[in-house]
Amino acid sequence: MADDMTGLTGLLYEMGLLKRYKRTGWLVAGVRDPESIADHSFRTAVIAGVIAALEGGDPQRAAFMSLFHDSQETRITDIPYVAKRYLKAPANEDVTADQTRDVPEVVAAMLRGAIAEYEEKVSLEAVCARDADKLECLLQAVEYREQGHQNVQPWIDSSLAALKTATAKRLADEALRTNTLDWLTRVLDRG
Image (tube, rainbow, N blue to C red; front, side, top):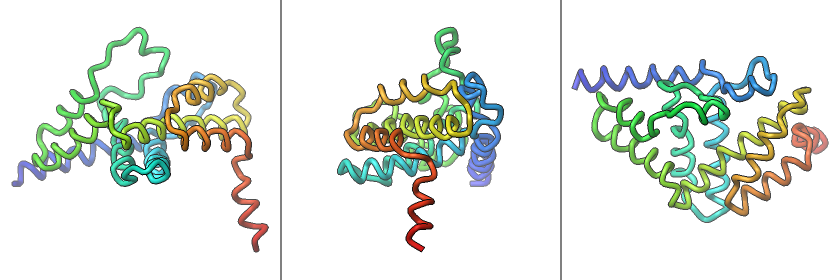
């Protein structure tokens, strides 16, 4: 049991790297200090739960998959999209299997199952989680654009093109129609 806890503790420390690793694609757009992979994964999980609930799926399952959808980047980093045409990264399922090699089997099975489901893109929850990943990227691009970064349109366009669910498409349309702080104005106006 001590060996299991040693491996599990190591995995937890490894997941902490996601708080330090930055989303590198934004560097191409000129964002000097982009959000971390953990920042991205957190909001992606929130969005996945919302989309799944509105689409009739299991919000907890969609959110759970989203929390771990980029966890492999502790080992392979966040490879910018343009670099992917030149590099051959291992399958996310293979990285996750390696990451969970020394943890209790119940934890390993839970994480491997979530990643396999996400990568298979078959379940409604996986589709919602994948839409959440793209919608989070779109929201982040809009936020960066409002902060003065003008080179984010390709991220907006590619995110829009990848959305599958009606809910994600409607949310994207609304995000593009409104200002990122409109919610705050509404709250303050209510007093």
